[in-house]
Length: 132
Image: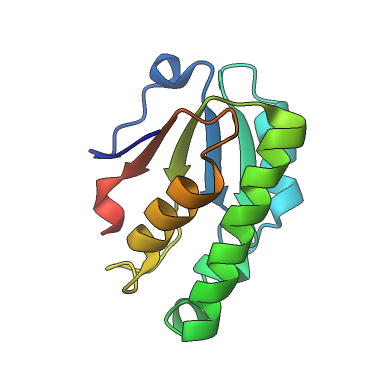
């Protein structure tokens, strides 16, 4: 599996066929973000949203328990992808995350995807670099 950091630039046709893993922004639920994505025909990717409190609550996001919960949600996403989405390419956008991203989050993404997704369909993961 290939995991790369990329410059943040959204070009809808660039992510055709990708699955987007994102954080629901403050004031929006994960379900709302996913429903808006399903109703946006111009968006050529499927979307899964992490709970907003996990990343967007800037105080909570900096705690060790938040990092462990983040790792758990990543593992759950990988399992859902294995059984439901079957995406081979995933782009991770945590735009609502605090800047700079709390220590350990990029490493958690790399670690969880490299260890949990080895035998699944995911072949490539891109992480926006402005999160680091």
